[in-house]
Length: 397
Picture 1: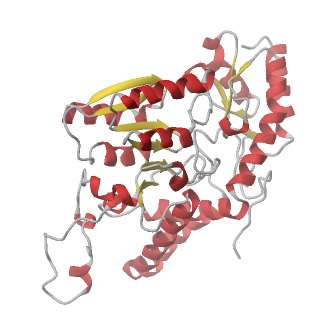
Picture 2: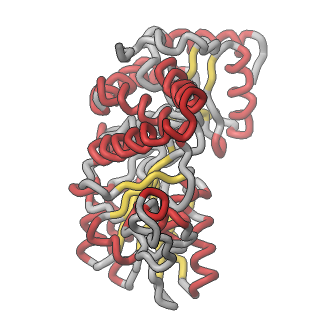
Picture 3: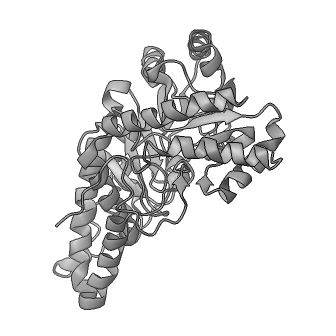
């Protein structure tokens, strides 16, 4: 019988030792179903060897369908990749660029969504334009107006994160997608801080490419993720690193009569071309298990639960002198609640001190980032505030 998840319950995380684990934006601990799924792969191969392979092929096919449903994508538009970086590189180095094409990037982004585009610019003679991601937090309308002006000057592709890893602000993807379509630009989204916690519909938002790793809000092991390519954009990509599984009908020479061993088969189209070699079956099994739990509860319900957790914590943090980066409207909020002390150089010390009190959080670029998920109970925020008070009483940060 499949184990069920319950909002606010850590029953499926019996190995987790940290009292308040609010660091899912960094890495999620694996639940018991994820650990069981990983073990099932090893057990299957231990019992049957190659005869077990077909079971994992089917499991990965079901996983792709689930991921497509999770982001509102059409069938066969998602491929499995090793991590977010690999998916960004597949697009950045796989697009058919023209010298002088312009890419719009955002200062403040995690380097995963910057470095590959810089590499593409060096290889193909592209131009990089920049906006500040934080402008969309401080003055959204002015930032959208500037984005429109940049697009009017000719931008081939906009590369943005769905949620900013420092402040937790959700970028206005619907408006950005509409502007990109109006000006003939493509929209690439790094969604690792969104999928699993923020509802996304790639079709409705006009997203052309999306990539997401699995070890944060999807709560799966490291080393697995997925790439989405809009069917309308599938022919714009060529494999960055092609290998034997990049081809259509790649297994033919292993399963049919002689004469099928060929090297001229066409490449698979779109996101599936990224599946070039032997897959991470263990990671895929873990991701299948973790997304099944998310499906049981629904992303909308998970986000609502996490916002209630934030609602319970934020006022107490502000009362204690911390500045909150949380957006005022629900549309701008995510799974991340970030605050900072008056002296931002103390943020790492605060995180270390909180860890000593059994509270796990992070300190990206001067912010103190709390990122709870569906297992976090609503009685945890008072415990976080008590931990802060205890640190202050002891003369801490």
